[in-house]
Every structure is written in C-alpha cells, then in structure tokens.
Length: 458
Ligand SMILES: Nc1ncnc2c1ncn2[C@@H]1O[C@H](COP(=O)(O)OP(=O)(O)OP(=O)(O)O)[C@@H](O)[C@H]1O
Ligand SMILES: [Mg+2]
Image (cartoon, rainbow, N blue to C red; front, side, top):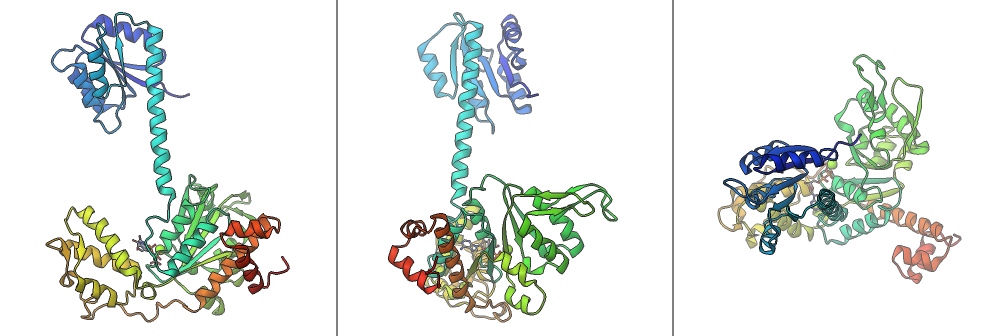
C-alpha cells in the first residue's frame, strides 16, 4: 500500500489546527505545529510533502516560515492561509515561494483538498521535468569526451551509429585512452539509457569468484556461499553489461560467456535452472586480443562473438592535436573543483605537454594537470608546475610494452564500417538510397564502399 503524503499544519489557534486535522487526516499523514520554530524543527527532522501555514503566527510569520521551508534541500509544497483575502499578501506570498494562497474565511474543505492536491501535482510534474532534463544532459554521453583528431572523430561517429543498436561492442586501446568513458557513452546513447549499466572489472577477481560474480550462485553452491546471490548479468537485465579488462578472464568463464553471448541464457553457480536475460554487452581490454588468441589464452570463437563492432582508441601520442584541448578541459574542471583561479597554460608549459609522449595516455595527462593546478600560484600553469617526466627530466613511464597494434586499427574500423553497411541494408531491405541516408553518406559513397567490401551482391 502506498503511504499517505506527509502534511504539516501550522496555526497558533488550536481549534483551527484540530479542525483541519480532522478534515484532512484521511488523505494525509497530518502533523501539527503552533509556531514557525516548532514547524522548522519538524521540517528539518522529517520529510514533509506539504506545509499548510497560517500567515499570522507569533514571532515569525507564515511567509517567513515558507521562505525557510523552501530553502530545504527537498522543499515541501507550501500553502499560505490568511484570515482575510488580500491581493498584496497573495502576490508577496507567491514571490517568497508559496505554491498557493488561501483565504480562510471563505474556504470550503473540499476546495482546500483540491488546492493541496493540485499544488502537489504541480510540484511532482516539475520534479519529473527536471529529471528528464538531467537524463537528457546525461544522454549526450559524447559531450564530455574531448577530441577533435580525425581518429577520435571516427570513434565518435561509430559510437553514434552503433549505440542505438543491440550489437556487442568491443573497445580496445592502451591503458588510459578512455575506454570506460566510451563504454558509458555507448550505453547512454542507447535506448537502454534509463536501464542500468552494470560494470564488472574482470581482472579484479580471481577466476572462481568471477564466475559467481557474473552469473550469481545459489546458497550453498560452494564453501562460503551463505546466501543466494544475483549475478551481474541478471542485474543488468534490460540494460547493458560492461565487462572491463575482458582479456583477463579464465578459460572456464570464457566458455560460459560464449554461451550467454549466443543464447542469452545461463545458470547460476550451483543451480540447474536456466535464466534468460536481455543484456547488451560492452567489453573493453588494453590487451591485444588477437595476440592472446594466437597464444591460446583467449578463445577465438569468443573473440569473434565479442567484436561484432570493434572500436580502437588511439594512444594519445598519435593524436597530439588533442593534447591542448584535453589539457584545457581538465584545467577548467580541476580549477573549478579546487576553487583556484587558474585559467591557462603558459606557452612553454603547452610546449612541454606537446613534446611528451604520454605512455599512460589521457589518464596521465589528467593527473599531470591536476598536480599542476594544485601547485599553481597565479592564473597560469607554468612549466615548473608540470611533473619532471613531462618537463623532459626523466622518471616517467616508458612507452614500450604498452603499445597497441596500431596498424590493426584501420582494418578494424573498416570492419565496423562494413558491419554498419550490412546492417543498414538489412534494415532497409536492400534499399540503397535509404541505407545511404541511414549511414549518413551519399549514394555514390555507399556504392563505392559496397564494391570495396565486396558487398555488391547484397
Ligand atoms: N577523450 C577524453 N575526454 C575527456 N576525458 C577523457 C578522455 N579520454 C579519457 N579521459 C579521462 O581519462 C581517464 C582515463 O580514462 P578511462 O578510465 O576511460 O581509460 P581506460 O581506457 O578505461 O583505461 P584502463 O585501460 O587503464 O582501464 C578518465 O579520468 C577519463 O575521464
Ligand atoms: Mg578502464
């Protein structure tokens, strides 16, 4: 059963308070206060939906009470009552935040009920509206991702196109290139944005635990399984599941994952019952999966299932044009958070940022800027405030080892493009004009690409 809205009645005359209580307690959970101070105490302690207050109160008046009530973090709906109607007072009350104004003398109980209900409804609509706006802001998941290099523009383009589909997305790139950010954007730009995005960091868990983390387990399934546990796949039902560092999962979990990807069904550990889920899978890794497949550490069939759409995030050193943009983006964000008036980089600081190779990519750049903002004294970041490695004084990470297979990138982007074209043609039942429109290219370009990908027959 739904609980009744909480209503606080503030009036210094006892008969009025009690009378209103008797009239409204069917529909509301009614509390009483005889002055503004008592009312504020209650308001700070409980979460009220509505305050109905008399204007004339001892000490602080009803208008002042409303002004204070409206400054609470979750302000209640406030209605002001007066003994006699006065237009000036009504205008003033609304200015101070009252949601409605009632003249007691003429007021019928059923009208009072109606006005309260209406004010509540209006507030509810406003809240819904605000939530909607917030969701819309979040929806533009790509907006906080900075980058104008052609390589990143291509990534954004693919994200925009595949996000609305249910296709599995595999994001590859060195550590710190923004894989998690892109994974979130894919979810945010999908029709599942209002459903959960559940993340599992596969490398953080030992093999035995990962399996029950993903699929859940029944009580007593293994020593230590005291309770039944719902796995991440079930939690993500209707939404997306982000498997981060998927290159780290063990052979047995790989087999199980392969099956979920194919059939969208699985069993909890220690249970024979098959569970079906509707989950969009997003995976990321900083390992080279092709190498892992070659080395026999990653199943080839799983790799193929995962890379329905493949995204490669280029290392920062391959998109130097993004460095100043990102640096300034972080500078603004961090300076605001630190409350420091730092606005820009001196030219030689920028030069140092541009000359450095950023082996740990965007994450390293962000950390460098954060440190510099912390040290900065004026409104500019100078070279002096940058980490020694960035200033060319050594002590940084090396780029060896972490290098992603760069030359594989264009090929896989092509793969993604090919997939898009196939999908567009399927969706438009082979209508090339419509398909071209869908992909956002001209008809001629589409024909050329069909030829290039040997898809002429489609
Ligand atoms: N293009 C970008 N615009 C703005 N911020 C970015 C961008 N790319 C990365 N970042 C920021 O850099 C940091 C590292 O990004 P993220 O965690 O997504 O990297 P990752 O590829 O998942 O790294 P790892 O492989 O180590 O998990 C985060 O703070 C992220 O917000
Ligand atoms: Mg990550």
